[in-house]
Image 1 (tube, each protein chain N blue to C red):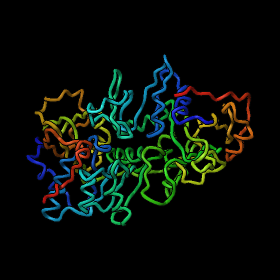
Image 2: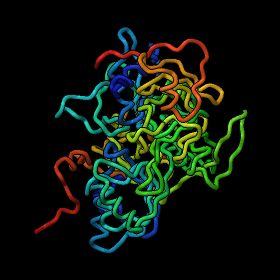
Image 3: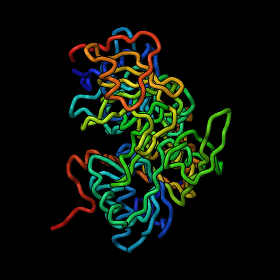
Image 4: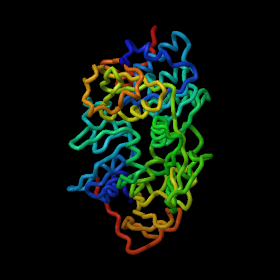
Length: 244
Length: 221
């Protein structure tokens, strides 16, 4: 078994119009910038994929990564908890112009909905959002005297994820707080594509340090020296680069 | 005279016991971490998957895989632990945090909190606020006592969209320390040169008395 893709373009080739795509990361940490940019490259060359539903904690920052995906016009709907950032102009303008739909989900509920999707649990009850606008229309139950809101699982056609080191079987480690939503999204997508800084042979990872077991991963692609969204934004980077 | 934001943060920090697990909301509440009393060490939780993180690194030494919920760079220190988002919010909702300290637009005498939306205009964003108000053993708010145009922020019922129902247990304001007990504001501390009547006039619901009211005094910071 070898889940390695030779390059980014082939890794994202299966994503089609209208699909739901989970994109890992919290802000820039753990965001698979190169996979996102490869998807934009395909769209610019072929016009596909478009009308995507994207699941991410945020809504992009600056003009790279998720913000660039939105700016390219590829995203019809965003499911997220916090569509603000240091420079949220791309999402804000698209949202206020009615060009993108927003489903706002409390952050812990978003995480648990994704986890539930990956774990085969169609619904669960949480105290979060009870009595608020975000609970409107959702069933409520009382357990041990407290009220809880029913939330549904969240699944995806694809997940685009950034991990640290992976092996050819898709076993993954993560680096510091870049873990965040990534292991959950690996579980919740029919096809999970992971960019890693390095791919090793089976046995190259200590089984004790593996956070995502390879059963949740369908493809790995090596991206040594991956960009950090924060560093790109501090350099005022724009994707795709504007050519004179 | 009233407490500055820094002094409010200092006052809230005095109530954090040694070895507490604490989440500080992004923005103003992050300041509480600077005022841990000597001899006490709290362990700070951040929603994006770190327990026991350290102070900000020197400029230029940032590692962008190591940030807090406000997307600011932090550091690790002996005892730091990393985890994914589902585990992080299990710590929140599961009752494992001792204290959460949050900002507020409005707090009602019922303990209802409004701190995520000022209304239907613009782009709505909630983040972890609705999760953080559930599960921590104490949910404290730090806030100015009144809005910029002088209206009470401590009210009978919130008018802005709620973050949570009956969730706040204590308010540290620029003028007072107030507990929320059985749907009432109970005054614990007030600025020494402010009369009860004057404080009541700045407050949108009745301030109940249940024992002595201490002076609210913070050092110059």
